[in-house]
Image (cartoon, rainbow, N blue to C red):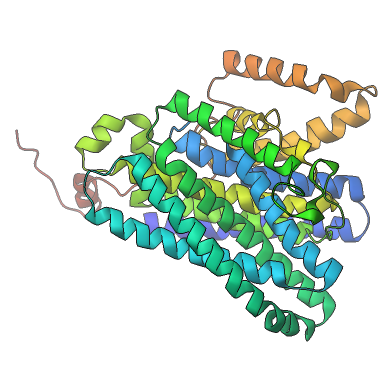
Length: 420
């Protein structure tokens, strides 16, 4: 019976998602929704992706993080640099080098993890040092090999139609932007996740500020002249369409749902409820924390890559620490631990606060947003602490638990005897 319910909910959810995506696309194609609303819909989907990552970290795992916006920025600039180099110089050097960096850094993580598994009792700072050395060596090797692979990779994409080549490069750029954000979160989270929740939040906030400062000086300090530092990066192709962003959002929702319904998902939630009890039950708390933090940062990197190709312009001020509270406010409004609430609140955030209120209220209202947001958040915390949706989920996202043993026996016509 549960299997049939699960199949029905899956089919119903997928059908509803496809119909919703198709209806919006038809309205956009017919011009019934102009470019303003098109941008807001895409921005709402991007905010849903980055907020789902934060809800996974904070709402389901209980780790108070303010670093989501920093990983969002990493994904945005990494993906934008790849597509910028292709569209402006017809060179795939950014794609080749970034792919090799992600590959070799991942291999270095695997090697260092194997080494640390044999070295019992090593402290987090020493482990972090080993990881950092591995990243530096892997990055240097990837850079040298990337220069050799640039010419053949460029020739391969040049043989394709230009529109198709750009779409393929865009897809890989967004994916690699998410992966590089995940790898940065892994090496950052290795020593920081040992801190308590409040100290962890302060450390992640500091990380966001560091990323903002690095982006301000990306053209001089980091050597990426095309990013233009504090002046802002221009010339990024506008490739993020409604179909692209809705497809990524659907995949992220499915990944989140499947993770939460797995044994790892139950372990993740148990860490939020009680770390000591989780350890007593044999759960590796550190492993569950790092898994959640890396996956949430991966979602943020994906969202950043999609955002970078909406307006074709990036500025470091978009990623300052004040904006890092936006996904936090969204998941509180939607409901901590609610995937449905997070998606709904993200679109409401974009369409209402950035859309309808800008059209209905007097000009200059946007300067009061940082007063209105805290007031609304305070009212929400007082009247409905669990958020708009609380623990509600649509049937597809709600986990169906197996029936108790005596209930299943009764349903088969058997009687059960309760023994004292």
